[in-house]
Length: 257
Image (cartoon, rainbow, N blue to C red; front, side, top):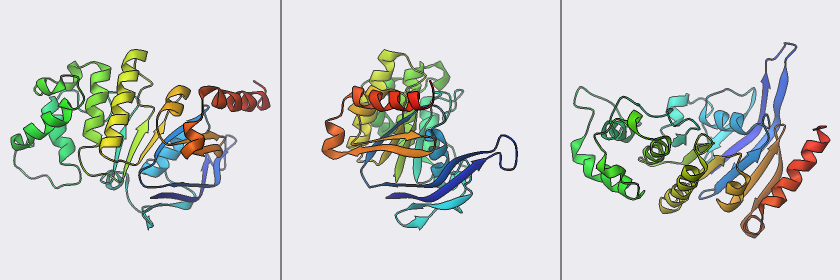
């Protein structure tokens, strides 16, 4: 279980551009939940992910996993328990290394590196199995450099890499935003398959309202650092895209847009 308790975050404190994004922000994500997070630009979606992952510090509050505070953990230490797929397919992977080499690096996450070979050929069969489950033929391209793949193929590999080791949480940071519509559909279907098969707890930030409705078992909408909608279970299952659009439009009118 993930808990964000009484989080406060002020950007540019003490300057004319000071902005209080979070003021006593609270969120609990239960084990096995797949949470879709939507909201306009500046609503706090990505900042929330960065706080969870330790990319930015908080001014007040705590982040806990299974009741244990991770506030003192550095970013790389948190990633031992989390996997993250970024918006940019180039992030989180090494383009000048092969798929096999990238998979081997991901498989060593949280472990010590010695002077032996960084590629564990004995695990190559397992890596192929994981890639074959995607149905994209990537298992036949193990010696191809990642930079030679399409954006969608790289995101698919990134998804496998992020979930290769045991995880507490999978963080999906607008991971389909840079892809064309057809490829984005494929990556979302693969994401749903991986989350369900590996029984992961996942948080997905997306600007695609349809994806937020169709995928996951909980939906959160954020605005100005606050949660303005939180639907799960039957309520979430019965939602349609127009339900979110209605709230978006109300917020837009209140903001004078």
